[in-house]
Length: 360
Image 1 (cartoon, rainbow, N blue to C red):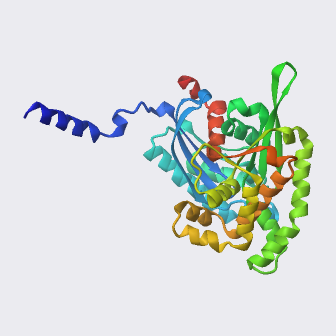
Image 2 (tube, rainbow, N blue to C red; image 1 turned 90 degrees about the horizontal axis):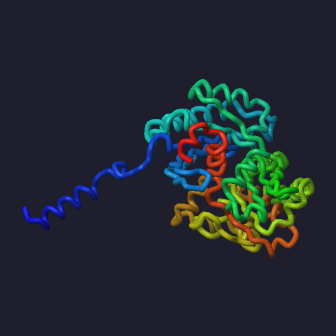
C-alpha cells in the first residue's frame, strides 16, 4: 500500500470514529433539568464548562404537552389525572436522561414552575414524583423564577438597563435589577396571576358555546380586568417602566415570534409593538393563514400542535397588554430571549449544585 492510500485510510478511519472519542465531556460536566410547567414538561441537558462565564452547550432540549394547570382556574387544584400523567412523563424522561445522556442522579434537577405552584394540592404531585424517581420536586415561587429568568436570559452587561417578562401557562412573571447605595444590586420581582392557560380557562367560564367568535368576544371583554392586573403589577415597581430594554420569554412569546417571523435564529431576537399588533390581527381574524403555513413550515406546525387558537389569543392579549402599559414603548428595545426555556436550569445549577465548584 503506497503512502497516499495509507493517508486516505487513516483519514477515513478518523472521520468515522465516534465524536465522543474526542469529546471532553465528562459526567461531572453534564447537568439536566425537568421542569413541570403549566402547559407542558420541559427537559434540558447541558454540558457545562463554566456556568459563571456562560460557557455551556445545550446538548438537548425537548418538551411534552401536559396541561397540568387547567384545574387551577376551575377549583384551585391540579386534577388527579393530570398529576398522574405528569408524574409518568417525568419518570420516563428521568430514565431517558440517565440512560441515553449518562447524566448522574445528583446532577438531575426536577422543579415545578411558579404557575403550577399556585395549586392547593401540590403535595400530591410532590409525592408522586418522589415515589417514581426518588427525587425531590422543588417549586419555584414567582419571585425566584423572575430572578432566575433575568440571570439566565439577560446579558450581564444589560442588567441595569433591562427588565425581563415571561408569559407562562399559569402566570406572568419577571423583574428587574435596581442599583441602591454603594452599588448594591437589588432584584425587584414582577408578577401577575394570569398566564396563557389560566386566562383561557377564565374566559371559557364566561362562554356558552365552543366557537371561536364567542371566545374572541368574551376575551375582548376580559381585557379591562387584565389591564388592571398588569397596571397593578407595574405599580408595585414603577422603575421597571423606565428600563430601556425589555427581554421577553415564555410560550406565548415563542409562539408569536415563530408564527410572525419564523423560527428564532439568534439568542436575542428584536421585535416591536407593531409586529405584535399585526400578529394579533391575523391570529383573531385570519387564523387559516397560520394553518396553511403549518403545512409547509415545521416550526409553525409545532406551535399549532402546542397551542390551540384560544390559547394563542390569550397569550397574545397578555403580551399586548404588558407592552402597551409601558410608556414610550416604541422607543424601547424589545427582545425575544430564545433560550428562556433553560434560564431556570442555568441559574439552578449555579445556585444549587454542590458539584459545580469542580468546573469553575
